[in-house]
Image (tube, rainbow, N blue to C red):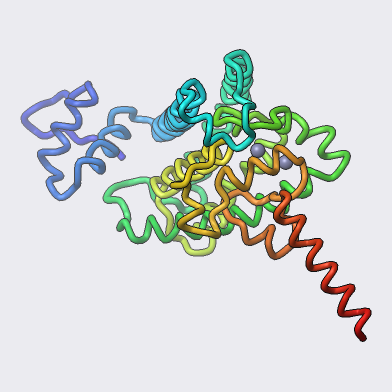
Length: 303
Ligand SMILES: [Zn+2]
Ligand SMILES: [Zn+2]
């Protein structure tokens, strides 16, 4: 994308908002977000840097921005009654240590990879220009990504609980048996890459098969997935939590039990994989399993 100066001014505006104003004059059909987007690429004059900086900034902003309300909630006694694991409120030192580790991993493991993102996206045929795709297309694709990534996460997370992989890789993520928002990405770099491959690989597979994906949709999907991961680690269960309205949604109720018991509830966003594969965790699931076993034995005796 390049900015073309009009004939009356020889120098193109050199500030971001200068470009925005100039671009708006000739692109009245674009909405505000599309103009902001196009101006950013025109301002940067380097698509790899433009995408790289935007991706990294977005990740940091969303990760810490979404974790902050959970940090504040942990300091307000009123909310303690909604804490899933009773009085296990994370200390300030625990949260700070976790933040330092996550920041280190973002800058050393994720930052270099984010730089490769634009060339890879273009190579696979992802759209990066304006106008954006219709909202219905964006929402539909994000729903598909949630379902497919959940399958990836279920199997690889389950595999990470196999002895040697658990000991060498996944144990770090289980440092906190009562998780909190910031702990969502507290994990070994190998785990981040393995499970992150589902988050990034699913949209790539999608664009390779369908040839239809905008990089904005990919961003919004990652924002959604970050919200999901942070909320699942929040440690809080409310009467208004999403899974009460969407019974197949996993949420904190599902993943907190995984951290507490170290076994079962391996999926990320939904409950159906654990239900179908009989890996649900917690006392209720154990009771149901026992009842099923007793019923089976009773019917065997009758035969
Ligand atoms: Zn685990
Ligand atoms: Zn976790």
